[in-house]
Image (spheres, rainbow, N blue to C red):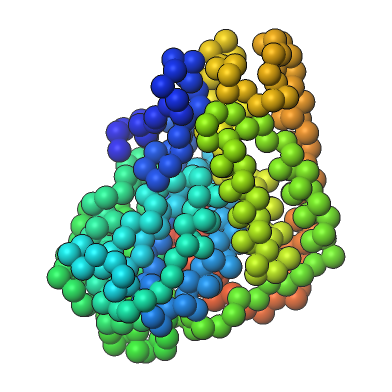
Length: 378
């Protein structure tokens, strides 16, 4: 990654008019140059025994995103979040590549990350922890600024020292790149420690965590849930799809609402809260988000790729329409935030510490490591 923290972007069409909206896919994302970044790479074992782990990850994604959205770097700066996803240990993957697959590189496209997470299935088992760590270190664009927070979370249940790459060597490489490795052993704490998961974390300045991966995630309902979900429907209505990605991306947004709801209404609420945060950006296909980008130009909009409600409209009319939708969105986001504040207080009174082991363990590790980089939580 170059020093200003820009990533290369690709226009969404070949016309010169597409100066602003960009593809936000697996290896391309839009970033503000002066924003600190929290980069989280999830390396998940998808062997036969890991169905419970994948289920927990699916059901706790939005709660993790929400917790990170409260972070600040210094006194004012809100960081950008990027998530990468790898699967390993699945016999359906390429043996020559160590049974490892990059599902998505670092991205701030939360809908795409959710879709990819829900696509994971389990099969077989050859789990090479050192190998998948090393591959992620080589393939991903890790943060290089002083306060960028680079974190790996690797989860599995076989011995950590298997495979062609020594985990000690991978850990050394991680330290050189300022990447912290956190290990999540799915099983008994002492068993994980004996099989080098504890040493794997400590050798890269991370936390060792043991969880019961077969335990179901607890999502506690609250009296504010229905109101937040109604606001979420209204929020979806503020998006102005533009360009060739728009139709698919708007459908994906609804699909991930549905996927979140598979784990209950309370989990769907957590996704709605994530969608109201500064992490949820869709400038590759939504005109409201795109207009915020530095090189956006009304004069260079391709009128042929405008949505039907803006066809034939003047630039002034388009500006007014986008401004109206922006104001509407901001009001809805504020209302969701207020409702969520009440929801959090209610849920806190009902929650046991070990209800959501994976999320709790990851948040504790992130906060501990983020403190060293001048991050605080409100």
